[in-house]
Length: 172
Length: 144
Image 1 (cartoon, helix red, strand yellow):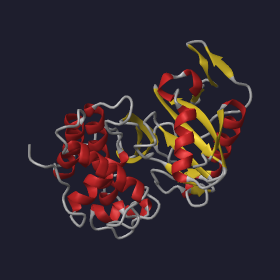
Image 2 (cartoon, rainbow over the protein chains, first blue to last red):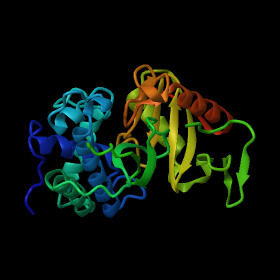
Image 3 (tube, rainbow over the protein chains, first blue to last red):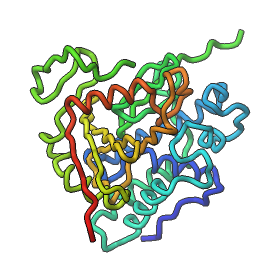
């Protein structure tokens, strides 16, 4: 099996893949399922693009031109404010996932390879159509408080609660 | 969002070990959930890995939301609240390790869409509920 690698940190896909791996529960967590992780990753990808395309200033990213600008916005995604540098705890978890995914002697290899590949696929693929009645614009850790801002909970998946905000009125 | 009301708790019929007001987030006793059963041994090791304090006080509060059970660990000496989702924290870091100096805002209006920051009210509720119903663990630093 070819070695699984993440895209360079400087690439957009590399930034997003790292964020998805950091924010989704992986195979080390009880209750993990690949389907749940992949759905959560697709919704996270949608959140990033919804933020980019809908007044990013309201998500602490005024003037954002790329999803890396969204990911680095102050106070938005834990440990990613100074990307391409990011927190040591997150880096350790991602490295652990890669190490297991690339170790044929580890019984968990297949599960971790699927998890990392899911992040790579979602980061590279087209964004899904928004399945919510509005715009999925937030996620919060399941069991934490809501995001405020008039958001309503849409779905809990992969250990995260996803929230929507109303779609902006069409321009006349 | 108002969480974890500390008074007037109503036991839920479906789960005797869980508590909440109708429509509110449910707390549960982590010592009775197998996923979190190794808390004492794990946090003793965790403290020795991450702290130089002679003594570490942890309080663990189980929270259930939409069928998902997690625990918040209040770590007094480190001034942190750490999410524990049942993984082995000695091997896999938490997805949410909240620094109460940096990651707390005054109100929801100041979250600005943050995935991880929390409000002062939320911290207060977690700390109060944990004192009242959480699992208290004191972990001395091992002497080598």
